[in-house]
Image (tube, rainbow, N blue to C red; front, side, top):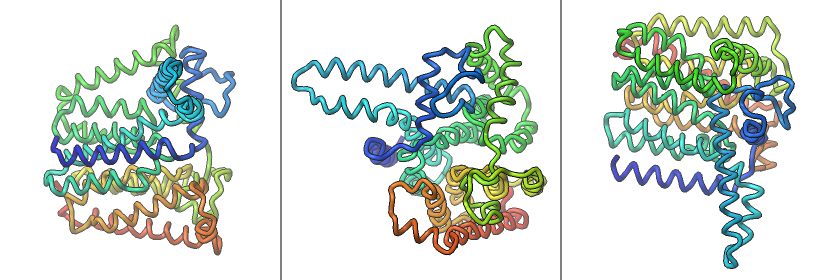
Length: 412
């Protein structure tokens, strides 16, 4: 690892650690805190029990997320015990104990996702061949305010999920197919938001000789069963996993028409309303539109896989129901990789514009930190500015989709 990328990662880490310790906590963090603590209290066997009482909401994420939150809970307990020991020393500042009791757990929950930010930046550096450009693109990711806001301020999980997937992609590029499919399995063990990539990845791996990824597939499956066993015992872990994904993960993600995303359904609804339930007809239209885009992408799957992933993630955000504002995240790291591959098509200027719109979308509705005049500006004239941002996203998507279908230079 070069000195330059080390310095970049270090500065990015320090910036995020300061924000972790000085910013407020989104309500979502209390779910993650509650899940991690409860896993220790009740044990894995009863953790997903539908009759369990929860302080905030029932767990609706796969088991790898829960193991992470439980580990954070264990780390918090260990550090608090250590701080109490230090507090017996007269010169130790007791105000640290007060801060830790109020903030330590929530700050630690944010920490893995801050580290995942740095991991993604390093993978971008590794993937991009021109190291001078790679350093610039990594810096654009590390210091992207939307990325920082997501992990260090909000404390969301998107960075970890995308880091695991990009590990799979990086190993695919390196032709280390066993590692690639292993990390792909881990991706869906952590969260299902990138399930949209599965058909494309299926076609990628079906072209590779099975013996080149068979070991990774088996190790991934065995690890899944081992991780599931404490939750499922004495049931068959396979049947329990089927129950988990059908009854807890996929079925408990809400039925919103729009989850505060600047997309088609925000324009249709003419307002942000996370309580508005999606009708069957709206779901059908949503999946038909997304399916048509996906088919167009798959029909030209000889094109660069990064470009394909970009369009799939972008179209999912813009067209599907139940989209949250955070689900535009996956296009940002792949956009930077595409800048290195197609500099005449993907430009830094456009990355910055899309990132700014994404930041505004993250800020919308949470309104933290609060700037009353700015909030009034965004919501003026029935959220005209927010709708304009949404139309800009659609314009970008159509531009890249047309180029993808027409430009033979996108082939590898």
